[in-house]
Amino acid sequence: MLQPTFDELDEPLRDTTFTVVDLETTGGAASSDSITEIGAVKIRTGEVIGEFQTLVDPGRSIDPYVSVLTGITDAMVQTAPHIEAVLPSFLEFARGSVLVAHNAPFDVGFLRVACAAIGMPWPRFAVVDTAVLARRVLTRDEVPNCKLATLAPFFHATTQPVHRALADARATVDVLHGLLDRVGSLGVHSLPELKAFTAQVSDAQRRKRHLADHLPSRPGVYVFRDAQGQPLYVGTSRDLRARVRQYFVASETRTRMGEMIGLAERVDPIECAHPLEAQVRELRLIAAYKPRYNRRSKFPERTMWLKLTDEAYPRLSIVRERRDDEAAYLGPLRSRRQAEAIRDAIHDAVPLRQCSDRLSLRRVVRAACALAGIGRCSAPCENPGEPQTYTDLVEIVRTAWAGDVRPLVDPLRERLARLSREQRFEHAAVVRDRVATVVRACARMQRLDAITSIAELVAAHPDGDGGWQLAVVRYGRLAAAGVAHRGTPPWPVIDALRATAEVVTARPGPLRAALAEETECILRWLEEPGARLVDTSEPWTMPAFGAGGLRAFLGSDAARFAADPFADRRRLPMTHRPARGSVPVARPT
Image 1 (cartoon, helix red, strand yellow):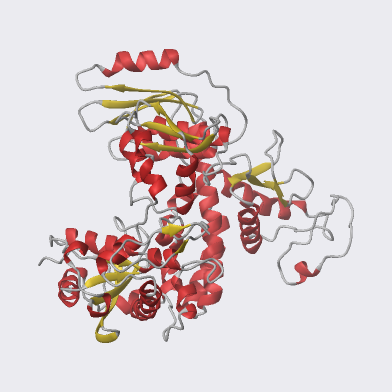
Image 2: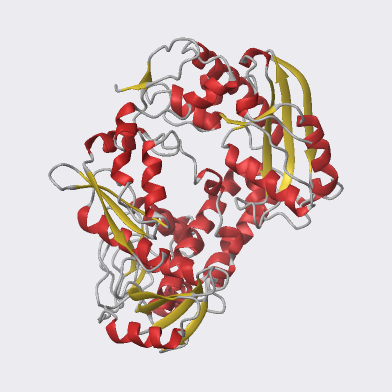
Protein backbone atom coordinates (compact mmCIF):
# COMPACT_ATOMS: atom_id res chain seq x y z
CA MET A 1 0.00 0.00 0.00
CA LEU A 2 1.86 3.08 -1.29
CA GLN A 3 0.82 6.68 -0.78
CA PRO A 4 1.85 9.51 -3.13
CA THR A 5 4.43 12.04 -2.02
CA PHE A 6 4.01 15.81 -2.11
CA ASP A 7 5.78 16.03 -5.47
CA GLU A 8 3.35 13.56 -7.00
CA LEU A 9 0.29 15.49 -5.83
CA ASP A 10 -0.48 18.48 -8.02
CA GLU A 11 -4.23 18.58 -7.51
CA PRO A 12 -5.65 21.76 -5.97
CA LEU A 13 -6.02 21.85 -2.21
CA ARG A 14 -9.78 22.20 -2.59
CA ASP A 15 -9.90 18.76 -4.27
CA THR A 16 -7.39 17.03 -1.97
CA THR A 17 -8.60 14.38 0.45
CA PHE A 18 -7.26 14.92 3.95
CA THR A 19 -7.36 12.58 6.95
CA VAL A 20 -7.03 14.59 10.13
CA VAL A 21 -5.78 12.32 12.93
CA ASP A 22 -5.20 12.70 16.65
CA LEU A 23 -3.91 10.19 19.21
CA GLU A 24 -4.13 9.82 22.95
CA THR A 25 -1.26 7.90 24.54
CA THR A 26 0.12 6.72 27.88
CA GLY A 27 2.98 9.21 27.66
CA GLY A 28 5.13 11.35 25.39
CA ALA A 29 7.76 8.84 24.18
CA ALA A 30 6.79 6.72 21.17
CA SER A 31 9.55 4.23 21.96
CA SER A 32 8.25 3.35 25.43
CA ASP A 33 4.60 4.48 25.60
CA SER A 34 1.48 3.17 23.87
CA ILE A 35 -1.58 4.46 22.03
CA THR A 36 -4.83 4.50 24.01
CA GLU A 37 -7.16 6.14 21.47
CA ILE A 38 -7.22 6.97 17.75
CA GLY A 39 -9.57 9.55 16.30
CA ALA A 40 -9.64 10.65 12.66
CA VAL A 41 -11.84 12.69 10.32
CA LYS A 42 -11.63 12.35 6.51
CA ILE A 43 -12.54 15.48 4.57
CA ARG A 44 -12.72 16.52 0.93
CA THR A 45 -13.87 19.83 -0.59
CA GLY A 46 -14.56 21.07 2.91
CA GLU A 47 -17.02 18.27 3.69
CA VAL A 48 -16.65 15.42 6.18
CA ILE A 49 -16.81 12.10 4.32
CA GLY A 50 -15.97 9.79 7.22
CA GLU A 51 -14.89 9.49 10.83
CA PHE A 52 -12.82 6.88 12.64
CA GLN A 53 -12.66 6.47 16.42
CA THR A 54 -11.64 3.67 18.73
CA LEU A 55 -10.09 3.13 22.12
CA VAL A 56 -6.99 0.95 22.16
CA ASP A 57 -5.85 -1.43 24.88
CA PRO A 58 -2.26 -0.32 25.55
CA GLY A 59 -1.39 -3.62 27.22
CA ARG A 60 -0.42 -1.88 30.45
CA SER A 61 -2.10 0.10 33.20
CA ILE A 62 -2.70 3.79 32.61
CA ASP A 63 -1.11 6.01 35.24
CA PRO A 64 -3.48 8.29 37.20
CA TYR A 65 -1.36 11.18 35.91
CA VAL A 66 -2.43 10.37 32.34
CA SER A 67 -6.01 9.50 33.25
CA VAL A 68 -6.45 12.94 34.80
CA LEU A 69 -5.26 14.55 31.57
CA THR A 70 -7.24 12.48 29.05
CA GLY A 71 -10.10 11.05 31.09
CA ILE A 72 -9.23 7.58 29.74
CA THR A 73 -9.05 4.97 32.51
CA ASP A 74 -8.08 1.30 32.72
CA ALA A 75 -11.75 0.34 32.89
CA MET A 76 -12.48 2.12 29.61
CA VAL A 77 -9.81 0.25 27.63
CA GLN A 78 -10.27 -3.12 29.31
CA THR A 79 -12.44 -4.46 26.47
CA ALA A 80 -10.88 -2.34 23.71
CA PRO A 81 -8.95 -4.02 20.84
CA HIS A 82 -5.16 -4.08 20.78
CA ILE A 83 -3.19 -1.95 18.34
CA GLU A 84 -2.53 -4.87 15.94
CA ALA A 85 -6.29 -5.13 15.37
CA VAL A 86 -6.85 -1.38 15.08
CA LEU A 87 -3.94 -0.12 13.00
CA PRO A 88 -4.74 -1.94 9.70
CA SER A 89 -8.28 -0.56 9.85
CA PHE A 90 -7.02 2.97 10.38
CA LEU A 91 -4.49 2.74 7.56
CA GLU A 92 -7.21 1.50 5.23
CA PHE A 93 -9.42 4.40 6.33
CA ALA A 94 -6.63 6.91 5.59
CA ARG A 95 -5.45 5.28 2.33
CA GLY A 96 -5.21 7.62 -0.63
CA SER A 97 -5.31 10.79 1.48
CA VAL A 98 -2.93 13.31 3.02
CA LEU A 99 -2.40 12.92 6.77
CA VAL A 100 -2.98 16.04 8.83
CA ALA A 101 -2.13 16.40 12.52
CA HIS A 102 -1.42 19.18 14.98
CA ASN A 103 2.22 18.58 15.94
CA ALA A 104 2.47 15.81 13.36
CA PRO A 105 5.85 14.40 14.52
CA PHE A 106 4.17 13.22 17.72
CA ASP A 107 1.18 11.43 16.15
CA VAL A 108 3.03 10.14 13.10
CA GLY A 109 5.89 8.98 15.32
CA PHE A 110 3.57 6.81 17.41
CA LEU A 111 1.88 5.40 14.29
CA ARG A 112 5.24 4.54 12.68
CA VAL A 113 6.46 2.80 15.84
CA ALA A 114 3.18 0.88 16.06
CA CYS A 115 3.56 -0.26 12.44
CA ALA A 116 7.09 -1.45 13.13
CA ALA A 117 5.97 -3.29 16.27
CA ILE A 118 3.40 -5.39 14.38
CA GLY A 119 5.59 -5.87 11.31
CA MET A 120 3.66 -3.60 8.92
CA PRO A 121 5.44 -1.25 6.50
CA TRP A 122 4.67 2.42 7.04
CA PRO A 123 2.80 3.84 4.01
CA ARG A 124 4.34 6.84 2.27
CA PHE A 125 1.79 9.36 3.50
CA ALA A 126 2.19 13.00 2.64
CA VAL A 127 1.87 14.88 5.93
CA VAL A 128 0.65 18.38 6.76
CA ASP A 129 1.40 19.78 10.20
CA THR A 130 -1.13 22.44 11.19
CA ALA A 131 1.20 23.60 13.96
CA VAL A 132 3.97 24.48 11.51
CA LEU A 133 1.48 26.00 9.07
CA ALA A 134 0.04 28.19 11.81
CA ARG A 135 3.52 29.43 12.65
CA ARG A 136 3.89 30.65 9.08
CA VAL A 137 0.63 32.53 8.69
CA LEU A 138 -0.37 33.83 12.14
CA THR A 139 1.25 36.70 14.00
CA ARG A 140 1.73 37.15 17.73
CA ASP A 141 -0.83 39.96 17.58
CA GLU A 142 -3.44 37.42 16.53
CA VAL A 143 -2.62 34.49 18.82
CA PRO A 144 -0.15 34.25 21.74
CA ASN A 145 0.87 30.71 20.73
CA CYS A 146 -0.01 28.04 18.20
CA LYS A 147 -1.37 25.35 20.48
CA LEU A 148 -4.55 23.62 19.37
CA ALA A 149 -6.47 24.92 22.39
CA THR A 150 -5.56 28.47 21.31
CA LEU A 151 -6.20 28.07 17.57
CA ALA A 152 -9.58 26.34 17.91
CA PRO A 153 -11.45 29.35 19.36
CA PHE A 154 -9.51 31.72 17.08
CA PHE A 155 -10.90 29.92 14.01
CA HIS A 156 -14.34 29.46 15.64
CA ALA A 157 -14.06 25.69 15.76
CA THR A 158 -17.36 23.94 16.45
CA THR A 159 -15.60 21.41 18.70
CA GLN A 160 -13.47 22.28 21.72
CA PRO A 161 -10.25 20.21 22.08
CA VAL A 162 -10.44 18.26 25.35
CA HIS A 163 -7.57 15.74 25.04
CA ARG A 164 -9.85 13.13 23.47
CA ALA A 165 -8.81 11.91 20.05
CA LEU A 166 -11.95 12.43 17.97
CA ALA A 167 -12.83 15.77 19.56
CA ASP A 168 -9.30 17.05 18.97
CA ALA A 169 -9.35 15.77 15.37
CA ARG A 170 -12.64 17.59 14.73
CA ALA A 171 -11.17 20.78 16.17
CA THR A 172 -8.09 20.36 13.97
CA VAL A 173 -10.36 20.11 10.90
CA ASP A 174 -11.72 23.60 11.56
CA VAL A 175 -8.20 24.90 12.21
CA LEU A 176 -7.00 23.37 8.93
CA HIS A 177 -9.82 25.02 6.99
CA GLY A 178 -9.01 28.37 8.56
CA LEU A 179 -5.33 28.05 7.73
CA LEU A 180 -5.99 26.96 4.14
CA ASP A 181 -8.18 30.03 3.67
CA ARG A 182 -5.25 32.15 4.85
CA VAL A 183 -2.66 30.58 2.54
CA GLY A 184 -5.10 30.62 -0.37
CA SER A 185 -5.15 34.40 -0.23
CA LEU A 186 -1.33 34.26 -0.52
CA GLY A 187 -1.41 32.28 -3.74
CA VAL A 188 -0.92 28.80 -2.27
CA HIS A 189 -3.36 26.47 -4.02
CA SER A 190 -1.68 23.04 -4.26
CA LEU A 191 0.27 20.68 -2.05
CA PRO A 192 3.66 21.45 -3.66
CA GLU A 193 3.01 25.14 -3.13
CA LEU A 194 2.00 24.45 0.46
CA LYS A 195 5.26 22.58 1.03
CA ALA A 196 7.27 25.42 -0.46
CA PHE A 197 5.37 27.94 1.63
CA THR A 198 6.28 26.21 4.90
CA ALA A 199 9.95 25.88 3.89
CA GLN A 200 10.91 29.35 2.72
CA VAL A 201 14.52 30.46 2.45
CA SER A 202 15.73 33.94 1.50
CA ASP A 203 18.16 34.79 -1.28
CA ALA A 204 20.54 36.21 1.35
CA GLN A 205 20.75 32.77 2.94
CA ARG A 206 21.48 31.07 -0.38
CA ARG A 207 24.23 33.53 -1.27
CA LYS A 208 26.22 32.62 1.84
CA ARG A 209 26.46 28.90 1.19
CA HIS A 210 30.20 29.31 0.65
CA LEU A 211 30.66 29.83 4.42
CA ALA A 212 30.35 26.06 4.88
CA ASP A 213 32.84 25.07 2.16
CA HIS A 214 35.92 24.93 4.40
CA LEU A 215 34.31 23.05 7.31
CA PRO A 216 35.32 19.44 8.05
CA SER A 217 32.87 16.54 8.14
CA ARG A 218 33.71 15.87 11.76
CA PRO A 219 31.89 16.28 15.08
CA GLY A 220 32.44 19.61 16.74
CA VAL A 221 31.19 23.11 17.46
CA TYR A 222 30.61 25.90 14.95
CA VAL A 223 30.58 29.62 15.75
CA PHE A 224 28.93 32.14 13.40
CA ARG A 225 30.67 35.52 13.64
CA ASP A 226 29.89 38.96 12.26
CA ALA A 227 32.23 41.34 10.46
CA GLN A 228 33.77 42.45 13.79
CA GLY A 229 34.39 38.86 14.86
CA GLN A 230 31.68 38.88 17.54
CA PRO A 231 29.94 35.51 18.07
CA LEU A 232 26.38 35.52 16.73
CA TYR A 233 25.42 31.90 17.25
CA VAL A 234 27.05 28.75 18.64
CA GLY A 235 25.90 25.28 17.63
CA THR A 236 27.07 21.69 17.56
CA SER A 237 26.84 18.76 15.19
CA ARG A 238 28.17 15.30 14.46
CA ASP A 239 29.01 16.57 10.96
CA LEU A 240 30.01 20.24 10.96
CA ARG A 241 29.95 20.70 7.19
CA ALA A 242 26.55 19.10 6.67
CA ARG A 243 24.93 20.92 9.59
CA VAL A 244 26.14 24.40 8.65
CA ARG A 245 25.02 23.91 5.05
CA GLN A 246 21.47 23.39 6.30
CA TYR A 247 21.35 27.05 7.34
CA PHE A 248 21.40 28.03 3.66
CA VAL A 249 18.65 25.75 2.35
CA ALA A 250 14.88 25.48 2.68
CA SER A 251 15.06 23.16 5.67
CA GLU A 252 16.00 26.15 7.86
CA THR A 253 12.79 28.09 8.46
CA ARG A 254 13.52 29.89 11.73
CA THR A 255 13.13 33.62 11.20
CA ARG A 256 15.86 34.61 13.64
CA MET A 257 18.32 32.27 11.89
CA GLY A 258 17.66 34.03 8.59
CA GLU A 259 18.44 37.32 10.30
CA MET A 260 21.61 35.83 11.82
CA ILE A 261 22.81 34.52 8.43
CA GLY A 262 22.40 38.01 7.01
CA LEU A 263 24.89 39.33 9.60
CA ALA A 264 27.33 36.40 9.53
CA GLU A 265 30.64 36.82 7.72
CA ARG A 266 32.43 33.64 8.73
CA VAL A 267 31.99 30.33 10.54
CA ASP A 268 34.73 29.09 12.87
CA PRO A 269 34.84 25.32 13.47
CA ILE A 270 36.12 23.64 16.63
CA GLU A 271 36.73 19.95 15.98
CA CYS A 272 36.02 17.57 18.85
CA ALA A 273 36.86 13.97 19.57
CA HIS A 274 33.22 12.88 19.67
CA PRO A 275 29.69 14.33 20.04
CA LEU A 276 29.80 14.45 23.85
CA GLU A 277 32.81 16.75 23.84
CA ALA A 278 31.09 18.87 21.19
CA GLN A 279 27.95 19.26 23.29
CA VAL A 280 29.95 20.21 26.38
CA ARG A 281 32.06 22.74 24.48
CA GLU A 282 28.91 24.25 23.01
CA LEU A 283 27.43 24.77 26.49
CA ARG A 284 30.63 26.36 27.78
CA LEU A 285 30.95 28.70 24.78
CA ILE A 286 27.32 29.81 24.99
CA ALA A 287 27.73 30.55 28.69
CA ALA A 288 30.95 32.48 28.01
CA TYR A 289 29.97 34.43 24.87
CA LYS A 290 26.18 34.73 25.40
CA PRO A 291 25.59 35.08 21.62
CA ARG A 292 22.55 37.16 20.77
CA TYR A 293 20.91 34.47 18.60
CA ASN A 294 21.28 31.61 21.09
CA ARG A 295 18.33 31.26 23.41
CA ARG A 296 19.18 28.11 25.30
CA SER A 297 21.82 27.95 28.06
CA LYS A 298 22.87 31.62 27.83
CA PHE A 299 22.52 32.36 31.53
CA PRO A 300 23.32 29.20 33.52
CA GLU A 301 24.15 31.33 36.55
CA ARG A 302 20.49 32.32 36.87
CA THR A 303 19.46 29.40 39.02
CA MET A 304 17.34 29.25 42.13
CA TRP A 305 17.51 27.03 45.21
CA LEU A 306 14.93 25.99 47.76
CA LYS A 307 16.51 26.24 51.20
CA LEU A 308 15.46 24.51 54.41
CA THR A 309 16.76 27.10 56.83
CA ASP A 310 19.05 26.33 59.75
CA GLU A 311 17.20 27.83 62.74
CA ALA A 312 15.08 26.80 65.70
CA TYR A 313 12.05 25.96 63.55
CA PRO A 314 13.28 25.62 59.95
CA ARG A 315 11.18 26.87 57.07
CA LEU A 316 11.40 26.83 53.26
CA SER A 317 13.05 29.84 51.66
CA ILE A 318 13.80 30.59 47.99
CA VAL A 319 17.38 31.81 47.47
CA ARG A 320 19.64 32.54 44.50
CA GLU A 321 22.83 31.05 45.94
CA ARG A 322 23.79 27.83 47.65
CA ARG A 323 26.07 28.58 50.57
CA ASP A 324 28.38 26.29 52.47
CA ASP A 325 26.33 26.20 55.67
CA GLU A 326 24.33 23.69 57.70
CA ALA A 327 21.06 24.28 55.85
CA ALA A 328 19.60 21.76 53.37
CA TYR A 329 19.16 22.83 49.74
CA LEU A 330 17.10 21.54 46.81
CA GLY A 331 18.27 22.53 43.36
CA PRO A 332 19.47 23.88 41.09
CA LEU A 333 16.04 25.04 39.93
CA ARG A 334 15.48 26.74 36.61
CA SER A 335 13.29 29.62 37.77
CA ARG A 336 11.69 31.24 40.77
CA ARG A 337 8.33 30.06 39.49
CA GLN A 338 9.49 26.45 39.66
CA ALA A 339 10.86 27.01 43.15
CA GLU A 340 7.53 28.46 44.28
CA ALA A 341 5.64 25.49 42.81
CA ILE A 342 7.87 23.03 44.69
CA ARG A 343 7.55 25.00 47.91
CA ASP A 344 3.74 25.02 47.62
CA ALA A 345 3.68 21.28 46.91
CA ILE A 346 5.80 20.54 49.99
CA HIS A 347 3.55 22.71 52.11
CA ASP A 348 0.60 20.66 50.83
CA ALA A 349 2.22 17.47 52.12
CA VAL A 350 4.03 18.69 55.25
CA PRO A 351 2.66 21.46 57.52
CA LEU A 352 5.88 23.41 57.90
CA ARG A 353 5.56 27.01 59.02
CA GLN A 354 5.34 29.54 56.20
CA CYS A 355 6.01 32.74 58.13
CA SER A 356 9.40 34.45 58.30
CA ASP A 357 9.26 35.24 62.03
CA ARG A 358 12.23 34.36 64.23
CA LEU A 359 10.81 31.77 66.61
CA SER A 360 12.09 30.72 70.02
CA LEU A 361 12.30 27.28 71.61
CA ARG A 362 11.42 28.74 75.04
CA ARG A 363 8.53 31.14 74.66
CA VAL A 364 5.40 31.79 72.66
CA VAL A 365 6.09 34.40 70.00
CA ARG A 366 2.53 35.17 68.97
CA ALA A 367 -0.84 33.56 68.38
CA ALA A 368 -1.12 31.08 65.53
CA CYS A 369 -2.16 32.39 62.14
CA ALA A 370 -5.05 31.26 59.93
CA LEU A 371 -2.92 28.54 58.31
CA ALA A 372 -2.79 26.68 61.61
CA GLY A 373 -6.57 26.76 61.84
CA ILE A 374 -6.96 24.94 58.49
CA GLY A 375 -4.22 22.42 59.20
CA ARG A 376 -1.62 23.92 56.85
CA CYS A 377 0.85 24.77 59.62
CA SER A 378 1.86 22.93 62.80
CA ALA A 379 1.96 26.30 64.65
CA PRO A 380 5.32 26.13 66.49
CA CYS A 381 4.84 29.82 67.30
CA GLU A 382 2.34 28.91 70.05
CA ASN A 383 3.73 25.45 70.93
CA PRO A 384 7.44 26.07 71.58
CA GLY A 385 7.64 23.32 74.16
CA GLU A 386 7.25 20.46 71.63
CA PRO A 387 10.11 20.89 69.17
CA GLN A 388 10.43 17.16 68.45
CA THR A 389 7.12 17.06 66.58
CA TYR A 390 8.26 19.84 64.31
CA THR A 391 11.69 18.25 63.94
CA ASP A 392 10.03 15.09 62.62
CA LEU A 393 8.26 17.14 59.94
CA VAL A 394 11.50 18.82 58.94
CA GLU A 395 13.21 15.45 58.73
CA ILE A 396 10.62 14.24 56.19
CA VAL A 397 11.63 17.06 53.84
CA ARG A 398 15.35 16.71 54.51
CA THR A 399 15.23 12.94 53.92
CA ALA A 400 13.21 13.34 50.71
CA TRP A 401 15.80 15.69 49.29
CA ALA A 402 18.63 13.38 50.32
CA GLY A 403 17.17 10.06 49.17
CA ASP A 404 13.78 8.72 50.37
CA VAL A 405 10.89 10.67 48.83
CA ARG A 406 8.14 8.30 49.95
CA PRO A 407 7.04 10.08 53.16
CA LEU A 408 6.85 13.38 51.26
CA VAL A 409 5.17 12.19 48.07
CA ASP A 410 2.84 9.48 49.40
CA PRO A 411 0.30 11.91 50.95
CA LEU A 412 0.05 13.77 47.66
CA ARG A 413 -0.30 10.55 45.66
CA GLU A 414 -3.08 9.36 47.95
CA ARG A 415 -4.88 12.65 47.46
CA LEU A 416 -4.43 12.35 43.69
CA ALA A 417 -5.91 8.84 43.65
CA ARG A 418 -8.86 9.93 45.79
CA LEU A 419 -9.65 12.91 43.58
CA SER A 420 -9.42 10.71 40.48
CA ARG A 421 -11.88 8.20 41.98
CA GLU A 422 -14.24 11.06 42.77
CA GLN A 423 -13.82 12.33 39.17
CA ARG A 424 -12.69 15.72 40.45
CA PHE A 425 -10.26 15.97 37.58
CA GLU A 426 -9.49 19.69 37.78
CA HIS A 427 -8.42 19.44 41.42
CA ALA A 428 -6.57 16.20 40.65
CA ALA A 429 -4.67 17.90 37.85
CA VAL A 430 -3.35 20.53 40.28
CA VAL A 431 -2.19 17.83 42.71
CA ARG A 432 -0.69 15.79 39.86
CA ASP A 433 1.35 18.75 38.66
CA ARG A 434 2.60 19.43 42.18
CA VAL A 435 3.67 15.82 42.68
CA ALA A 436 5.46 15.85 39.34
CA THR A 437 7.22 19.12 40.15
CA VAL A 438 8.57 17.79 43.45
CA VAL A 439 9.58 14.43 41.98
CA ARG A 440 11.43 15.94 39.03
CA ALA A 441 13.33 18.40 41.19
CA CYS A 442 14.38 15.73 43.69
CA ALA A 443 15.30 13.28 40.95
CA ARG A 444 17.41 15.88 39.17
CA MET A 445 19.35 16.82 42.29
CA GLN A 446 19.89 13.19 43.29
CA ARG A 447 21.20 12.30 39.81
CA LEU A 448 23.55 15.27 39.82
CA ASP A 449 24.75 14.60 43.35
CA ALA A 450 25.45 10.93 42.58
CA ILE A 451 27.85 11.57 39.71
CA THR A 452 29.44 14.76 41.04
CA SER A 453 30.45 12.87 44.19
CA ILE A 454 32.87 10.77 42.11
CA ALA A 455 36.34 12.25 41.96
CA GLU A 456 37.16 10.53 38.66
CA LEU A 457 35.08 8.40 36.32
CA VAL A 458 36.30 6.94 33.04
CA ALA A 459 33.70 5.79 30.54
CA ALA A 460 33.61 4.43 27.01
CA HIS A 461 30.96 4.47 24.32
CA PRO A 462 31.04 2.53 21.01
CA ASP A 463 31.67 4.83 18.05
CA GLY A 464 29.75 2.64 15.60
CA ASP A 465 32.84 1.65 13.65
CA GLY A 466 34.50 -0.81 16.00
CA GLY A 467 36.22 1.82 18.12
CA TRP A 468 35.51 3.60 21.39
CA GLN A 469 34.64 7.15 22.36
CA LEU A 470 36.35 7.84 25.70
CA ALA A 471 35.67 10.41 28.41
CA VAL A 472 37.29 11.29 31.73
CA VAL A 473 34.79 12.92 34.09
CA ARG A 474 35.89 14.55 37.34
CA TYR A 475 33.26 15.70 39.84
CA GLY A 476 30.68 15.81 37.04
CA ARG A 477 32.89 17.89 34.70
CA LEU A 478 34.28 16.60 31.41
CA ALA A 479 38.03 16.75 32.00
CA ALA A 480 39.25 14.96 28.86
CA ALA A 481 37.84 13.31 25.73
CA GLY A 482 39.38 11.06 23.09
CA VAL A 483 38.81 8.20 20.68
CA ALA A 484 40.39 4.77 20.40
CA HIS A 485 39.78 3.94 16.77
CA ARG A 486 39.18 0.45 15.51
CA GLY A 487 42.32 -1.64 15.95
CA THR A 488 43.82 0.75 18.53
CA PRO A 489 44.23 -0.65 22.08
CA PRO A 490 42.06 1.58 24.29
CA TRP A 491 44.09 1.41 27.52
CA PRO A 492 47.09 3.45 26.31
CA VAL A 493 44.64 6.10 25.08
CA ILE A 494 42.87 6.09 28.46
CA ASP A 495 46.16 6.44 30.33
CA ALA A 496 47.14 9.38 28.12
CA LEU A 497 43.78 11.06 28.67
CA ARG A 498 44.06 10.68 32.43
CA ALA A 499 47.55 12.13 32.44
CA THR A 500 46.55 15.19 30.41
CA ALA A 501 43.05 15.71 31.80
CA GLU A 502 42.03 19.00 33.37
CA VAL A 503 42.72 19.30 37.09
CA VAL A 504 39.33 19.82 38.76
CA THR A 505 38.72 21.20 42.24
CA ALA A 506 35.39 20.32 43.82
CA ARG A 507 33.04 22.76 45.49
CA PRO A 508 30.28 21.90 47.99
CA GLY A 509 26.87 20.82 46.77
CA PRO A 510 25.53 18.94 43.78
CA LEU A 511 27.27 21.32 41.33
CA ARG A 512 30.81 20.66 42.46
CA ALA A 513 32.76 21.52 39.31
CA ALA A 514 30.47 22.11 36.32
CA LEU A 515 27.19 23.63 35.22
CA ALA A 516 24.11 21.49 35.70
CA GLU A 517 23.50 21.28 31.94
CA GLU A 518 27.02 19.95 31.33
CA THR A 519 26.67 17.24 33.97
CA GLU A 520 23.23 16.27 32.65
CA CYS A 521 24.67 16.05 29.15
CA ILE A 522 27.30 13.62 30.46
CA LEU A 523 24.63 11.61 32.28
CA ARG A 524 22.58 11.20 29.09
CA TRP A 525 25.70 9.98 27.28
CA LEU A 526 26.46 7.48 30.05
CA GLU A 527 22.89 6.16 29.97
CA GLU A 528 22.85 5.50 26.22
CA PRO A 529 22.90 1.84 25.07
CA GLY A 530 26.41 0.45 24.84
CA ALA A 531 28.05 2.87 27.26
CA ARG A 532 30.49 1.25 29.71
CA LEU A 533 32.12 2.35 32.92
CA VAL A 534 35.84 1.69 32.62
CA ASP A 535 36.90 2.85 36.08
CA THR A 536 35.64 4.97 38.97
CA SER A 537 37.37 6.28 42.06
CA GLU A 538 34.19 5.71 44.11
CA PRO A 539 31.07 3.60 43.50
CA TRP A 540 28.34 5.29 41.47
CA THR A 541 25.21 4.84 43.58
CA MET A 542 21.67 6.17 43.69
CA PRO A 543 19.19 6.19 46.62
CA ALA A 544 17.13 3.00 46.76
CA PHE A 545 13.92 4.95 47.36
CA GLY A 546 14.90 8.08 45.48
CA ALA A 547 12.70 10.14 43.20
CA GLY A 548 14.11 8.48 40.10
CA GLY A 549 11.95 5.44 40.78
CA LEU A 550 8.71 7.41 40.33
CA ARG A 551 8.85 7.30 36.56
CA ALA A 552 5.14 8.03 36.12
CA PHE A 553 5.79 11.58 37.32
CA LEU A 554 9.10 12.12 35.53
CA GLY A 555 7.30 12.42 32.18
CA SER A 556 5.04 15.29 31.23
CA ASP A 557 2.39 16.13 28.70
CA ALA A 558 4.73 18.94 27.78
CA ALA A 559 6.95 16.32 26.13
CA ARG A 560 4.29 16.14 23.43
CA PHE A 561 5.18 19.68 22.43
CA ALA A 562 8.86 19.65 23.34
CA ALA A 563 10.12 19.60 19.75
CA ASP A 564 7.48 21.91 18.28
CA PRO A 565 8.84 24.61 15.98
CA PHE A 566 6.01 26.87 17.13
CA ALA A 567 6.80 26.56 20.82
CA ASP A 568 9.40 29.33 20.79
CA ARG A 569 8.75 33.06 20.77
CA ARG A 570 10.11 33.97 17.36
CA ARG A 571 8.85 37.03 15.57
CA LEU A 572 6.68 35.92 12.65
CA PRO A 573 7.44 37.13 9.13
CA MET A 574 4.89 38.74 6.84
CA THR A 575 4.50 37.42 3.30
CA HIS A 576 3.55 39.15 0.09
CA ARG A 577 1.13 37.69 -2.41
CA PRO A 578 3.20 35.70 -4.92
CA ALA A 579 2.37 35.10 -8.54
CA ARG A 580 0.50 31.86 -9.12
CA GLY A 581 2.89 28.94 -9.18
CA SER A 582 5.78 30.81 -7.64
CA VAL A 583 7.34 30.14 -4.26
CA PRO A 584 6.25 32.67 -1.58
CA VAL A 585 9.11 34.80 -0.31
CA ALA A 586 9.42 36.04 3.27
CA ARG A 587 9.57 39.77 3.74
CA PRO A 588 10.88 41.45 6.89
CA THR A 589 8.39 43.21 9.10
